[in-house]
Amino acid sequence: MPLNRRMFLEGSAVTGAGVALAGAAAPVAAAGERGRGPRHPKRYELTVMGTTDLHGHVFNWDYFKDAEYADADGNAKGLARISTLVNRVRRERGRHHTLLLDAGDTIQGTPLTYYYAKVDPITAEGGPVHPMAQAMNAIGYDAVALGNHEFNYGIETLRAFERQCRFPLLGANAVDARTLRPAFPPYLMKTFRPPAGPPVKVAVLGLTNPGIAIWDKAYVRGRLAFPGLEEQAARWVPRLRSMGADVVVVSAHSGSSGTSSYGDQLPYVENAAAEVARKVPGIDAILVGHAHEEIAELKVVNEETGRTVVLSEPLCHAERLTLFDIALVLDRGRWQVESVRASLRDSADVPDDPAITRLLADEHARVVAYVNQVVGTATETLTTAEARYKDAPIIDLITTVQEDVVREALAGTEHASLPVLAQASPFSRTSEIPAGDVTIRDLSSLYVYDNTLVAKVLTGAQLRAYLEFSAEYYTRTAPGAPVDPEKLTNANGRPDYNYDYVSGLTYEIDVARPAGSRISALRHAGAEVADDQRFVLAVNNYRANGGGAFPHVATAPELWSESTEIRTRIAEWVTAKGVLDPRDFASADWVLTREGTPVF
Image (cartoon, rainbow, N blue to C red; front, side):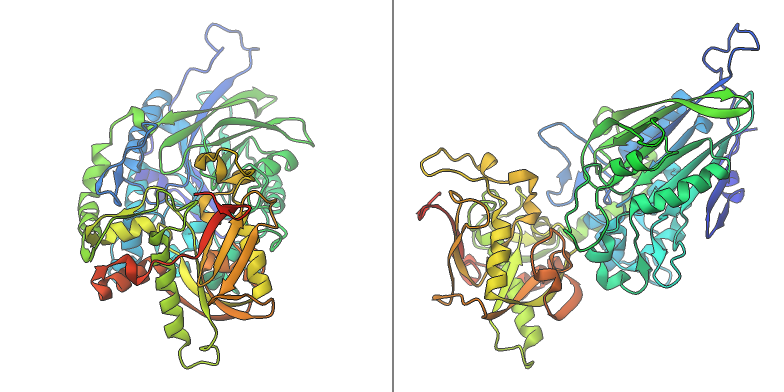
């Protein structure tokens, strides 16, 4: 008799060491068994499905544009589409021959998730059930690895979400800072029962990103620690094998590139999934997350065993579903993995699952109404279309708000007389605040992250180094050479969110010069900035904690910080003004040049 979802849950056992989940598999004819003699090996196949970096996308909807999501590549997104794909795979393979996982970053990223973290929070007594918990419970996820953005709203919000989920949140390397014992279940063990032979045990090890210790330091410092992925995988994989695991799958919120965005502040690699596959024996497949890349199948050979480990990363925001098809053969009474194949399925190929859209229709309607609230009026259209390479007034709005908030916070303190500067990045290339009514969604599209504000003290010399590092974003371009904005920016893969404006100063960035010697005419209030001059820098918490590996800022003295999102501060500022007029905030701070001649 097949087990239903409730029977799975009632039969599970959750402990500090992990989650054991036993299920029955409906008989399936194994390849090669028909018409063969008893000496032919018994075979069994199962499918592990995976998503990652959902970032609160339940619907194929763009809350910032108040319209169905669309892009130039024809992609679609949302768990409602994933549900349709999952149901198809379960019909094809048999429900009890499949496992459904996620590699983290679920509860942050859209106005939908913000609303249920801050406006109508799930932490309130008698509060709502998080939309992501509702959707993922209904779809039937088996386990989800913790992502770094799970910690953006604090541990209490994460724990409330965890209580609402009918699946474990896995994090073998999220440990109690004092005892170093796992603070979340490290693994899930699920048992499948083939029609012949012993049960098949599949272990899922969850690993999260060590950068959490930097990016969400305000929430986790002294409470949680995050050792490296390779270190913890080497500890747990042998244990899982000794517990009888025939298959070991890792769900890792960590990219495959081997790079880090936080420099040398931690002794761990941020994007370590491929290194885990290469160094830690005993892993069969890794569901990769965090990098927002699409990798259908990546094969990595383990250095110790010579066996191939298969990695796959489905595109973020529920745009793709990974399928690991795992074939096993019975050898001397034990199941051995014979092959692993990975492939992707596309959410654009299927419609929404009406069961999911009906389930969360009310929550969706509330958030649509919230983001369409009018908070002011703009005198002209402001856009980020050219903000990567021209000093754009729309980014000056962010820096002006940050300067005002920090000045007010420092008023009456010993630091009140220091000049206040501000940092901001061109997060989006498509954000627009139209002339006329300004809504919360307009402002949210400008600042898409839930960052908060920090005030740091830097010297003139440190600011120059900070700006030189930021200017590495530009490709060196000779005087007189044609300028293509698409080739001018993102040098060496530097993302837009790791290029910073700094307001309150004026400076030139000479893109004809080599990186490290591009900043000139650096002035404050018309005077050359002195190396020992002191400034207050209003900076977002991601950058303040070391995100992007900008020099000096992470170790600079901190004067003040708050938990209110910068996005909220912008909305408050616009609401108080009533009218959004560039004359109130636009400034000419920097310009791209080649040997003194402006590029644009």
